[in-house]
Image (cartoon, rainbow, N blue to C red; front, side):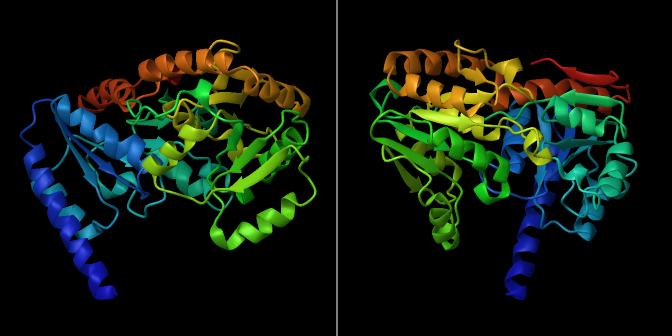
Length: 372
């Protein structure tokens, strides 16, 4: 196993060497994205790998450094093919600290709330403090990072699956409601809230889908729901799945729930990740009226935006399930807004001026800036 891992590290390092050499010939400049890890649809994919691809089409030499490219190889790359800027994608990789790339200026990109962990706050704060600026996934994250760096830019997570149209229009879908957390056991406040919503549904033949349940925890989740659902609601558990398969499976869903509970500090740190999948699959969104949701969603225009009252959510879900044309109108408007504001191309468009400022040694504007 160790030999295989070593071989993979060599392959990824050799690829990085070739990419870094080629990148030096690009007219706009060279930027490295140091990845923390994650597969398709993760923050690593959407906020770094995909954005790097768009930047390359804009004339940048954009290199995505695989997490397996070690410290020695990175020093070699820095010596022979130094970039103009390094973007540290999250702080979960041990080499994602500006001191490892000095004197090249670094930008930190985060869309997680790891900094609220007392065991991590000092380390993550030090990374942010030593960067030229911090790109955050929401205003809430901006407030968390403000004590460590005054130069902040909000860039919502975008998707490249905005052109992946589902086979069935929302207006023709069955009464399927989905809640799609990365791990429902990790968001217990939201799980309890979704439970209260489900208990208030009155439409007949509703299927409630809970995503992100590991097969080994199916029995535990089924036990949790035992005797909690009304007779008109059935439960279907969905495992974690690949990004494209996940979005395609949502093509059967009529209504998608996006609750964010104030009592869950990690929930408040959410970006638009799961909402992106709903929008890409033409799922009608019902979302909490907090964090950055009201900056994108308009109640009754492209979604249902509600206070966290399960009675209101239950009634809204009933209305939407019984009103297929209303769902389709909201979905169509949501797709238009997604295509203009929540795509990978839009993310790259917002990041590019920050790369230019950093490359030229110019300061960022102070404060939490957002141009969405």
